[in-house]
Amino acid sequence: MSRIVRVGNVFIGQGYPVSIQSMTNTKTVDVDATVRQIRELAAAGCEIVRVAVADFESARAIRKIKEVLDLNVPIVADVHYDHRLAIEAIKNGADKVRINPGNIGQDWKVKELVEVAREYSVPIRVGANSGSLRKDFEQKYDRITALAESALYEVRLLEKFGFYDIVVSVKSTDVLETIKANEYVASKVDYPLHIGLTEAGVGETAIIKSAIAIGHLLLKGIGNTIRVSIAGDPIKEVIVARKILASIGLRKFGQVIACPTCARCEIDVEQIARSIEPIVEKTDLTVAVMGCVVNGIGEGRHADVGVAGTKNGAVIFKSGTIVKTVPREKIVEELIKLIEHTRSVPQ
Ligand code: SF4
Image (cartoon, rainbow, N blue to C red):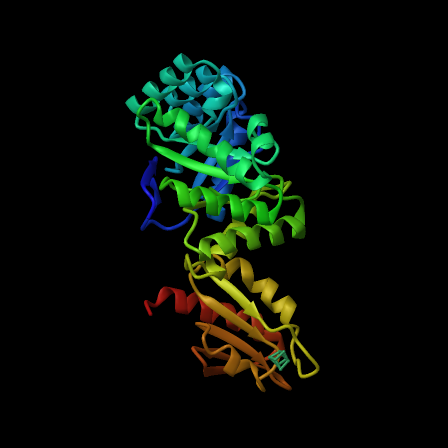
């Protein structure tokens, strides 16, 4: 069981859906560019957006961003070291702040931040990354314990001032370290956990590492909000995050399943799957693209809608029952029609 933390209109914690986060890579002071990217992220399915706050101008830009943004997506201010920036961000509408009190310095500064966060009902995310462990903990503990204890140290600095509106994260670039450190933290505190890897890499490497670590933890009931870390366009992070959650059945997002193809294949499975994927992802349907009818209909019967190749084209089926036979050149068109019809008719 974890506590529940409210971030704007999104609740994180026990009983609430695992939420998807990402971070803008625009200059936060460039309000137009940042708003544009937040809109794109939200359209892709991002539910909480973090922006970097490197100076007072960036902190104040949060207010402008929220004024221009015609969406209710919570904004998290990412702050390092300077508690005054975190306070300024909160006063300018940040829905959550990410800052480590251990980096702030003196106690009075942490107290000042905590008082403002409490006044505005803004939670604080604290944690540790494998690249920023406390030196004394590195000497005292093994790497995993040092990572987890570094995060817990930050938690205690907030608790010291009676602040408990906390989200915790422990991230490593290493899959096993991330898993073990999160398990450790989950066994010690009941705050919601923000899970993901840090600096996971590019493309497939980042996707595979993230899917293993995040998937493993979520299947064990650990983790309440996720960020997939992929170098480059943050939209990819959101797409992958949705796929991870849908794959393990924690959220119902539209997904395309497709057979790997073999010598029996009668249609271009990959091309059809790629053509319909952007449409399917906007629904909550599972759509199967199968190369042949020999195994295709049976294996795809759990999908809401499916297609299986035949000598002359394909059969289109719904929950395992054939509803139409179509020629090769009409497969994608007819499949989309059935997807659109199925999504518009309550099941
Ligand atoms: Fe092969 Fe048909 Fe199975 Fe696809 S569905 S892998 S084409 S047998």
